[in-house]
Length: 246
Image 1 (cartoon, rainbow, N blue to C red):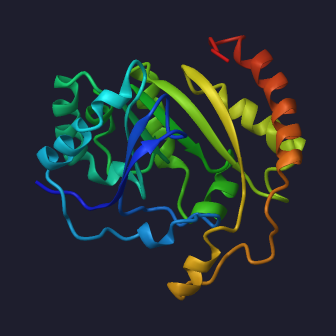
Image 2 (image 1 turned 180 degrees about the horizontal axis):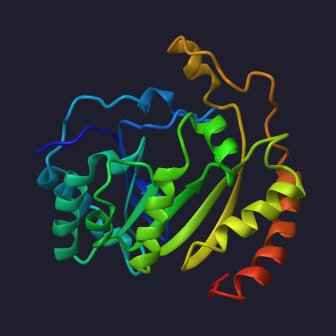
Image 3 (image 1 turned 120 degrees about the vertical axis):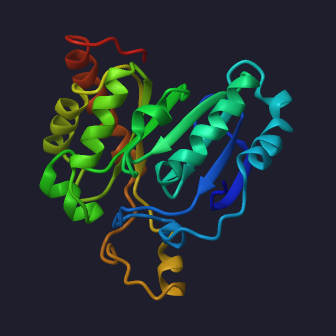
């Protein structure tokens, strides 16, 4: 068994707690208009066995200390579910913390994948069916299935929301996000990521039209102000039905 891995970052600091090895799998079913890695949409050549990947990750185990570990990212790691299941079994023998950075859209088998996952980093694309399809090109249904299973298994979750100008940078969307997140259990953290055009040149190289040609980068100060508004509302509403560890 092999999987297609684009690259491996050995000292990641933003994709989960502590120092992490971040494994970027190729392939993704979504075509997000703000995606900055279009070169990873299609699956590449299979180049790692589970044993080869785990042996590489183990080299950095001394740096993990108390809360570091490995994060599966992409692309979309859930398109490599059988491979990840095997890797997780091996990593658990080494007591290595495992995070999954995902859009929640793969080929199913989510319950089996999540059995050995310690933390989910879930990317929220949009809160409505219409908005989600406009941004990603697909229906919202699959991520809803993934959320139901993560809720069932009581998995810890960090939420990530890209803030795109003229789409998410308003209180109406913030309110819809607060309501959407109330249906997700065990949220430990929510991050707002300002939209940027850093991946624009990749589209030119790949001869793909850049969807947000007319959009400027999201103003970071405005994004921070929106987060303050969001956090006040979210903390109040989420506490009514869930525990939130801010």
